[in-house]
Amino acid sequence: MALSRPTVGVAEILPYAAQRAPDDVALITGTRTLTYAQLDALSDRVAAGLIDRGFTAGQVVSLFGPNSWQWITAYHGILKAGCVVNPINVMLTGPELRYVLDDCSAAGLFLGPAEAARVAEHIADARPTLRVTLDAAFDELLADAPDTHETPAPRGPREAGSIGYTSGTTGHPKGAVQSLESVLLNCAHTATMHGKNERDVILSALPAAHVYGNVAINGTFLAGGTVVLMERFDPAEALRLIERHRVTVFEGVPAMYSMLLALPDIGGADLSSIRVSTVGGQTFSTVVIEKWEKLTGAPLLELWGMTELSGLGTTHSVHAPPSPGSIGVSLPGLDIAIAPIDGSEGPVPPGVPGELIVRGPLVMLEYLGRPDATADALDAQGWLHTGDVAYLDESGHAFVIDRLKDMIITAGYNVYPAEIERVIAEHPDVAMVAVGRRADEIKGELAVAYVVPRSDAQPDAAAILDFCSGRLAAYKRPRDVVFVESLPTTSSGKLLRRKLRDLDPVALGSTPV
Image 1 (cartoon, rainbow, N blue to C red):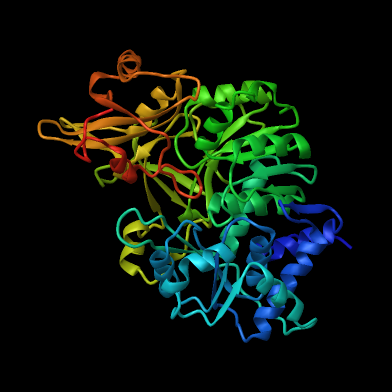
Image 2 (cartoon, helix red, strand yellow):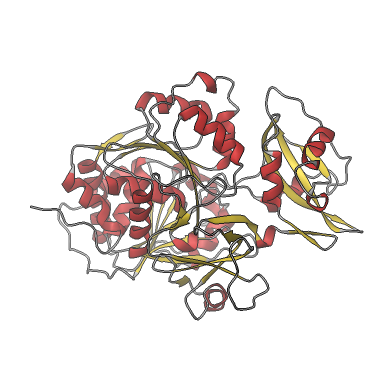
């Protein structure tokens, strides 16, 4: 009997994969290896346990914990029960978690044991009536689940399937309501663009709660491959896993590649199994791309996405000609365009920067309970205004310059931190770099580079500033360099530029480094 591909939403991915190849390995973690049949059956038991406890279609169940087989099992079980899954950034503090739980009216909560202890006092009287830690309590839920249960009412593809919260750079985070269909389509189209198949073994340390991590995992399940999941990223351990499992696809963010390339023994690692790598989360130096591609002999594909799109919006096809520095072309079915930054109407010519806007079935349904914020982000024609400054070339490839909100205005000129970061990242003594702003009485704002040196180097600020002089216009150059041991990042490894001010000795009232 021919298999019927998933048609409604992400909840169908595991049953489909388990019917196609039940004994193939689906997931490898540090503590357990599961076949598709086992992972499907375990998630069925989570669904049965939720339904047995009175959970009904449309109720929100939150997930707050590190990458693990329990997290993946709970995610799919929640969806199979007809509930709406709410993956939460594991780095949130107790008060931040409490806000999310209250905002989405979560009826249930799965959380890691370490996280449970950390946030206990802040969520003691929170709404979720069912709380299951992803340890012995999770095993009890699986054991106590009935063998048979009432099948949840069918749900439509455009009904809510997931609520992902934005990073909340200003004020409280917003819950982007993603449809069952949008998550499925994102997984399917991304897997297709990256050429994923049943022979692939992917390695990911991306947080499963992040849309990039979610698509990397579930896109692989949809293709029938194997996911090797790290709880957290460690460059030396990542190399060991690549060699041990003959990893064919590595998925990461720029900081991960910088850390891998900074390893003293990276040149001797066996990376020959890798057929493709992906990178997203922020702009990326083409020099780093070239170094990684030379080591692996395989393409490194840049991508771009956001919570409001359930994952990716653009990427490269693995078989297409390269376009260095580009985030690729739109996923199938998604329209992308460039709108004037000043808010006016009319087309923006190729090569001219503007705001990147997108439209199509991948776009969120709404910001939960925030009609005003929804109206600000989604215009009357259905275009989502992303807040990213970008341009399109003649072939339709998109090039992101930076976030509008990160733009530095110095003496009336617009300066984009990412442009400076790409240049400084090329310096041989630099492991990682981020560019932030510093207030200035004369010019308004100045660009400041925060640099993590390579472990075997001792660069000085003057040398890095001089390195920029021949590569950047005078108004774009940073005015100071601050050397730091690490950079502030999100759980997915994305730079937190708003936290750079905490590293600035001038802002803190001390002498510059």
